[in-house]
Image 1 (cartoon, one colour):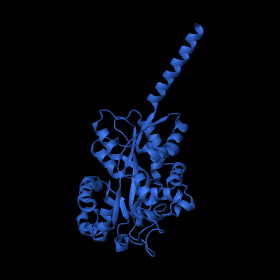
Image 2 (cartoon, one colour):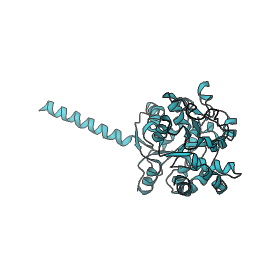
Image 3 (tube, one colour):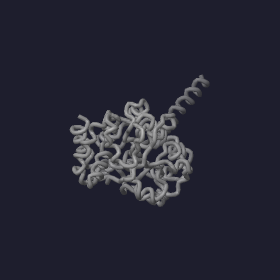
Image 4 (cartoon, rainbow, N blue to C red):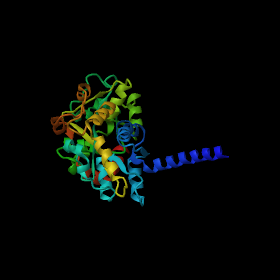
Length: 341
């Protein structure tokens, strides 16, 4: 009987310890798949090593997680990763806690383009640019300029994301003498590109499938996806047009109502450490968002990986995040009606 009671007590104690650990975990909301793994392997595990606090992840799509957060009476996560412009929708909805920068000492090395707001800051950066299969496009085709996408020889060979057309809308405006704020100037030019589109991808996996299979040998591509596929043996070339590439910054923020704000600040500071940023670059071929990251010469030489102020200033096409957040729905509606249909 005593032995049974001791065993029962040990089982109950283990269950209680597991419950406490789950309750005490820092909860991070992010995308699923490789991005969840990236955060866990580069930031989460180092955070747990330094603090002893486990990290729990909840995953979902960008807009799905935003809508869920708007409906919640209390935050489901302590930290949220999302894109810089969608982050502004969280800010506007009052969902983020204002950051205490004194608790993020590595913020002092944050590049200007990653200082998104007092509520959310960059975790890594990337570009949307032109990726193509030299083995599957007509001989002599190059992409020294975004204008090269309009080459009639590329009819039925191009794909782009259907969920965020802001990249090509901004590019079309720029090539027409405007910018994102006067995007209407580029409407006719973008309509002229319609014959060259073959497909519109819905997510990263679909993007990879289309260009790997050769169905769309030219793509407006997320640089990190392109480098992943190159690593898998797909012969893709990443271009850096003379006008630059459209910058994207993924961000992190603390949810308002979190009971673990000190730990959340610690997590963010670890994310901005030179060692962790170097691991992120090595894993994803992203741009580090601090100026003192230790990046290998091979990674630093890749198009779209920015490691110097000059690159940030001259090669990044920046769409204002607030404007982008405001216009996303309008742009998507116009693009669906005029280009995809």
